[in-house]
Image (cartoon, rainbow, N blue to C red; front, top):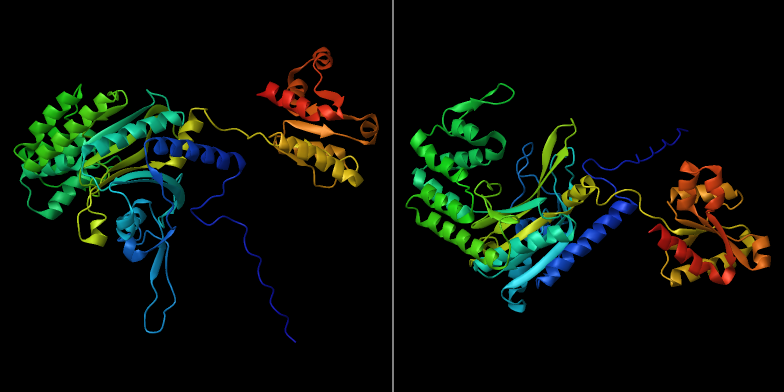
Length: 495
């Protein structure tokens, strides 16, 4: 009789492009989400928690993936019902597409404008890379139903306030503002009729931050050699045709007024471009009235990413401090948030144009920035550990831990094998516990407990002389009824 084949054990590994988060990381993210939500709420936005799954039809389009075009979501088809094929469903790839569906579905029950914020994970079925995961958190705030530039100015102000609230000081960030309509005006001034050529110009503009003015000039013309020595064909424009693009990209002046004047020169006689400049002028004036100067928010035509998606103002929050990359080279941290006006998204559902503007903050990027600045990170403080000297007196130890918890102190009873006391202290050390509580039979008879300051003990053991050790004991003997008070005193001293 043949033996049954053994089923192979599953591999204990995280799926490619995903990662696990432990203790301090989860707590730090939760605290950041709480702070961001506080700013959004202060600005009058209401919370919305929509489904993590949408129909593929509602999402509208897949994200671009260079290796697998139009396959940027995790999607599956439900079972058929009779002759009706099953719906295609997908994990949401951002929080904006679900908002468009929610607003279209519930618009008769929602106020206009509708101001909402949303936070949560999104999923993208893209090729993972260093620091690029298939699941990550976003924090969005959007205003749907108004064309007023006051809504865009408010988003920019709120973005600046949010960065400062989570620990990014002024001087370490800048919110930069541009307008898609200005770029459309530049394309009109160039006199381009061919849509493919327009797309090529947009792709070239998007490379401005990498190749600079000279590189863009070459790519708009005949082409250029890249860093690897490969020749990249250009768009084939004449110098006169390329002129408005270069004027647009280099129009940033010493003040908002100077930048706006330069932009008027770049757009020529374009009505669309003039409308975009006027919108930027309105935003700048509204921000100035609220005290948001160019040290926090500035008009900057070099903000070009995502312009294909937006229909008006666009904004990007960039962290300006330097970090070192994996090769030890200095570089700026870069963008942590972006957004803009998108007036066509809801129209897909309703057939009617619905103006909207919003911003999305990349939480994981912000957390990484704060770790780089040393403002968060390190091991999180663990709980007070009540050790078990006599397993038959578990009720006594549970009573102790209950008193500590009632006093708002994080605490736990050691639940492993209590036979080896040294292992209990090793456990407390692995948990980064600040205090251990000890009550053996002798202490119980005397009505006392031993309280060990584990943080101070570690410091003394590492640096102190024998005399200092004797002068600064890290273990205290107190009456049982003073347990909570002494633990509180030690914790306050550690803080």
